[in-house]
Length: 406
Image 1 (cartoon, rainbow, N blue to C red):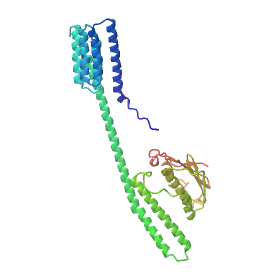
Image 2 (image 1 turned 30 degrees about the horizontal axis):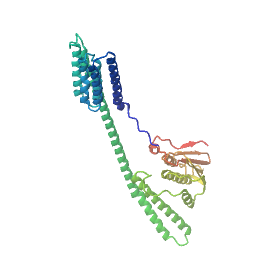
Image 3 (image 1 turned 180 degrees about the vertical axis):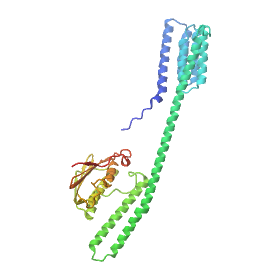
Image 4 (image 1 turned 60 degrees about the horizontal axis):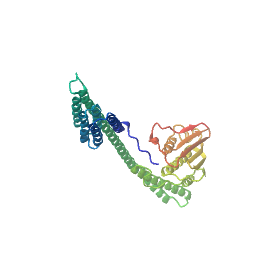
């Protein structure tokens, strides 16, 4: 479903609302004029004045100056017909308001209507002396007020449009500058990873290869461990190259590279490294978006690593698939006080939980932990599609991993 277009602000709709309102007033005035002339059995010239007002108003919407000339001529024609001209010069004031609001020159429109109103009103009352009759001055002043009011409204609208355009340009410039800075920082980090981590891993892999060759023929067990370590280093190197590709492109979902290995491969590799893992899968595997699949893999990977570093004994790992996502539950026996892992997973001050929390939040998931005197539980949820809140993974005010009392 496509989103409905944003409604323009009220001030942008003001000219259209004012134009329609004034046109409605003019239409009512013309209807009243026709009815009054018919009731009084007025002369044909009175109908001509009404026709000039109607035709001029319609013409002014496309050709402002010729239309105003016709509307302004209606009042003198009404005086010539011997009828009251007040209604016609009032319509002329409304007409000049519309055309100036729509972009006509206020000087040209104001002069036409002001002169016509003053002349027709003075002709009708027979004087321009305000002490005798102020109709001529009132008619001219009304035209000036209508013109000035429309010009002021149009000027204010133009000011708002220019201010909004400048704000949009400034926001676009700031966004471009931020994106440029982020891209430069990504490239810098990519270069640092390539020059340091990638090089050191490659050198370590070569040393392990040399050690395999130098081992005596009966050192089969040591050879197996060296080969496994070398394979792990090669996997680290491949992962580093994948991260470099993501950093250079700027978005994981568009970055080239391979998908993470399956959880089966991860558990098998961990068992080969010496971990005792009770591994089970519940439910049918749910298709996950690439970002969610990567987050799930990293959460399990980091959870197993921290459990091995800061726990002991068997690690229980359960992964449950459901239509609304995947739940990971990892349980391990806590290390003895004072033993290895005193500042690790499940103990305040460790950094493992912070990274796991940020990884889960990056795709809209959750992470919870709880512990008792013997066991430590870690529960994480990953949705099938990322629901990424703005900068949640990097927000310093984002909540840290939740700990529950057993």
